[in-house]
Image (cartoon, rainbow, N blue to C red; front, side, top):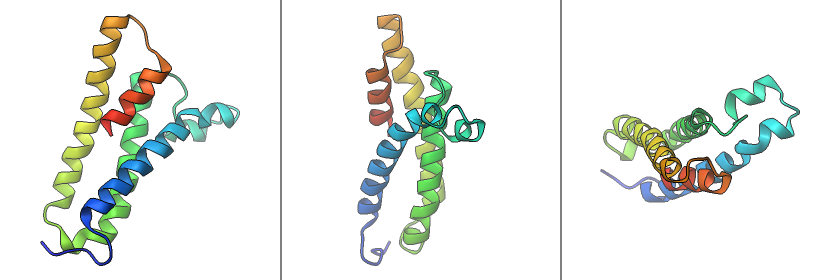
Length: 121
């Protein structure tokens, strides 16, 4: 496995993590800011359900994987398999953390929901 031109694969992973966390946090609120536009609701959260957090994580991880693949495809092995497994683990982590903390607290808390998203990414 050779080194990508300019940046290492680890650099792209770190940039992707920051990208997903920042854009995911912003998208958490864009549906309301858009005046409840249905098209915006396809990619952003419109309530506090687990599904909405899964949707944010999935779409952003997929977008980043497509961007990242363009830059590191020649220097990595099994990128698509690894990214697919990573996306599944992201979705599993969101569900596991959400249902674990709500089992103890009995309700969803916005700050903990955002932290769950960040930790899962």
